[in-house]
Image (cartoon, rainbow, N blue to C red):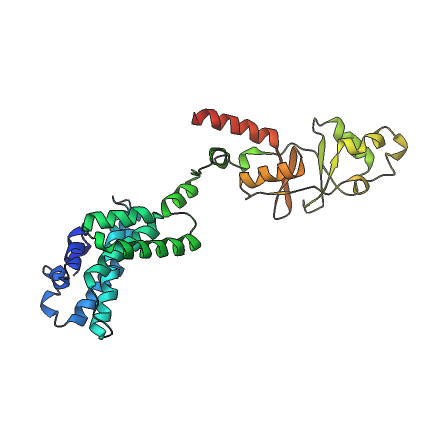
Length: 306
């Protein structure tokens, strides 16, 4: 029914640019029932819409291909359909071929976030340098609109989903490769708000950490105890059964969410001046992340990237 869907579609683009839409259906079973221009318009529109679906199915099921040829295909068909509709409706008789060419640059610019590439590539392959101003206008508008809704292109988005972040800043790129879950340390001692100072002292005896987490009965983080802050109380045995954890704990200067990116985490370390920050998942305590651990991972990733 739609022979132009097979292959890259460059031949069908050429036919549209030459305003020969009927020739697209010479080998179609629909050829004999094409009776008027409106029917041609409907078939061209369906071909454009089905191409999007067909490309998605082809690539999603493991077939070979990319986004370049489909972008040109859909762009050419979109430009043709727009101009052809205005002409058939009697609104205005505009150069259909020019709209076919310019729309290719618009789609290409939006899909790849590459307006300059779209402008000069389409101008070169079509020999349409007299259309350089319309190409610039359409490509720029397309890029600005797409950039607003999708800050990164589809290719970069795929790399982000795979965990391979591309960044112009090498430090940011390397940091982004560090898995947050992998740097969470879970061997910090845990206390409860009503624990007495004696229990705090016992925990300190068995830990090498300078920070202890205070959680409630639901394991939600409510505070921290810093060894330096209670040093005086530790050597006053008369307070062991009088002071409870709630009296000596501090609010954390910052918390790290489990799904937070590593760049944001490093920013929190810089802002607070802390070397250990608690990690929570919707308020529930998970562990701590240390700045030194992240820097160690960073150095390892840096060596691998050299």
